[in-house]
Image 1 (cartoon, helix red, strand yellow):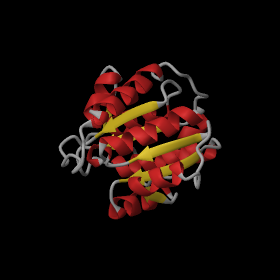
Image 2: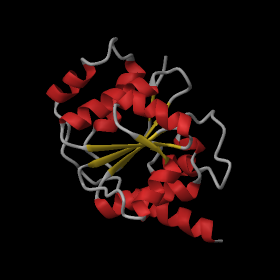
Image 3: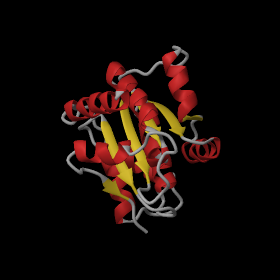
Length: 193
């Protein structure tokens, strides 16, 4: 079926991008970004922060249960990226989740459906200095994840898939994040309380 072909192509793209290198975010910028948070990150949150900003691999996965501070970490990640000249593009499967991501990062986040439409229609262009933060990625259907992965590949951008494996799966064709985790040799960061 067509969905399986799309998923296979997406996973091949991700495997091929595992060793792609990017300019690392400096320690000074990281510390400045962390200084904007009203508390100190715990060990799990620090792992997510470091993982999403490391300079290797164009697709990253960060997981954590509800309440583990993923949104706060995304705010700090967004701050570090912005200070380093990146275009931060946020998306989430629902309008409510996109609003929460907007509040956490200070950047307008779209529904994933709207982001895919804007990318396909040329209303939004990603570049090598773009970083897409996809929140609640586990709830996003495979076709939308694949479309964002393809846009990231074409532009040389980066992508962080953030979510909670305990959340409901996508209503449409889903399960992409679990497959992506395997394609990345299970290299994920986990937020903890």
